[in-house]
Image (cartoon, rainbow, N blue to C red; front, top):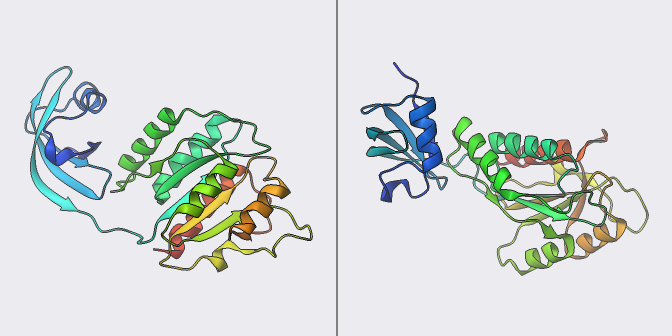
Length: 243
């Protein structure tokens, strides 16, 4: 019995053909043929059991046999905003692992001390899709373009739906809010946004700016973590609290 393969097909119930890249993988790599069963995922909470009806070198058509709405593993919206690392391999590793764990939205921040100010979201998008398929997640995380830190705060302030807002940093200076453990501050069932800074941390001015807009300063523990490790720990905490 062949292993059932998962494919990402936006609007899967309104089309009958795999996207070109998925079709080539199905036909050329997996050698799928007419009659083979596969599972489609639309990235919006629904799986579809389907059967291949035609397979050529460039095309793979299907027929949906069963629609399978999925239950959310967590109810609130989990949003992580981070400054990408100078080494993109580390940011890509984070995107993959965070998707496997589970979260809803990813924003890249351009901060005062960011060592990377440009990022190709197309590459990250492919990693999110691949990780979603591998881990059988029903929802694909929303990926936002890189945003200036101040502009991002202004955008968040305009959102009408309330959320818990946290900023992770390493400072202990006077004039900043007293830090608490993120795992103790996150409340189950409420939307959450966590900010993680660049390798050189946020600037003190950025921390003060965030606190002035209602962000709570938090720590992830006593260990000093790399940017991508801190971001992954934050995602894991949000996910566990809301399971």
